[in-house]
Structure formats: structure tokens, C-alpha cells
Image 1: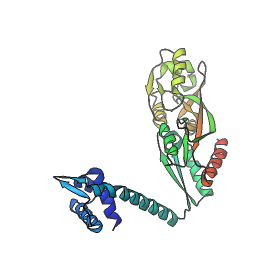
Image 2: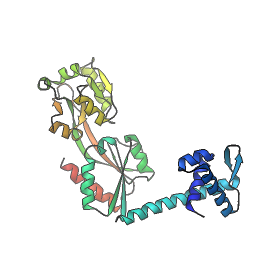
Image 3: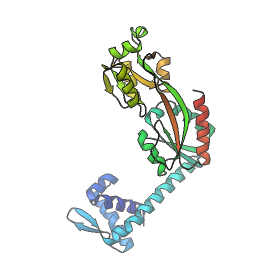
Image 4: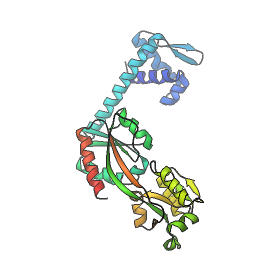
Length: 290
């Protein structure tokens, strides 16, 4: 029995269609048919009933399907582990992180962590903030880095960093004359690029500046580009705009009536293995220097 027959069977069972299975597997339809025939011959039982262009699992096919999926999953996990071993890794750390963290301090931090722990394979999964808690809860990731508190109750949450949020605008010739009131009246306020603080902050802004014009942009990287092009202003965590402030692409606008919020970085865990604890300690030390 060959593993490629098992994979073909699982995909065909999912679609109940040889053509769709062949497209998914990048095989010809005759090749898919051949794999199924070989598997059925090997098992000495029929797994599918042919009904026109469709195929339907027999009772034996339904029974075998759960075994086949488990076997395929075990095989793929084993091959991943073997490939990691070939590359010199003996441990693995899966990090689920929000885009705004992945695009700011995380790359540099991971580079230094890998240099100190070359035997740990680091895998980064970029997810929406509200998805990270679920990823940790079901064990698909070892560590979650989020700007949003999770709703799951079976995971551990640590606050590892907090930082000021500041109002920033484009670096134009009028930038030196921009104060909070002038900026909010002159530019659109780009909102909802951060998962945590915007609802409360926007209510406060509208209370002081009821005529404020807003524009929703759900990613910080896009927000920064919009501001650079003179399309608006926004309140952003300082680590997210450190480079742009240093290179004078963006300028800080001093607070007046509005008290800017604080942004928090949370570490989410379920099982604190040796590599998880090593990364958390490294993360805390690195963030304390920002």
C-alpha cells in the first residue's frame, strides 16, 4: 500500500469527484482512478460507488476514511519532523502572531533568538488578533503574540509590554505648525487599524471634535503609507512607527484635549515547554530595551 494512494483516496472522498480531486492533486483523472483501483485491490474491498461523474463512499469507504486521514496526518507530521532533523533542529516552536506585531519588532527579535537557539525551529503563523487565542487553545501554536486579550479561558495570558500610542501625521511643509486641533480639522482620521483601543478612543475624539472625518483602514502598514501620502492622520503604537519617525516620514502631533491610549502586547500560552519559556524570557528582555 503506497502513501500516494492514501492521499488520493482522502482528497477524492472530500470532493466525491475525480476531476476535482485530480485538480487538487495536480494529477490526471486516469492517474486518480488508477490510485483508487490499486488501493481497492490492495484492501480487497470497494471504497467508492460510481454514480455518473460523481463517486460516493461505500460503507467500507466511510470506515476506512477515518483510518486514512489519521495515517496521512501521522505520515506528514513524521516527514516534517524528519525534515527538521535533517536541517539540524531538535525542537520546534510555533508562534501565532498578529500582523502589526509581525511587521514591527518581531523579525529582529526572532533573528536574535535563532542566533542564540540554533537548534529550535521557529515557525511563524500570521493570524487576525481574535484568531490567536483559538490557535493556542486547540494546540496548533505554542505561543501567541497579540494586542488583544483572548476570550478563551483555558489559556494563560501574560502582559509582556506596554507602550504609548501617539498621534502622527505626514511630514509636509506645514507639519511644524500642526497641533491636535488643526490636524483633526485638516485631515481625515484613519481608524480601526489596531484591534483594541479604537472604539473608546474614537468616542473621546468625537466628544471633543464632533465634526471629525474618519476613514477605516484595518492594517497598520497600510495606514502608515496613507499618512505618508497626506491622506490622513492616526493614533499608532510608538514601536509600529519608530522607523518612520526616525526617517522623518511621519511626525508626532502633540496631544491636547485627547489622552492617547496605551497599547499592550500579550503572550498567550497553554503548555509552557522549555522552548516556550526560553522565548518568553528572551521576548521580555528584548521588549524592555525598546
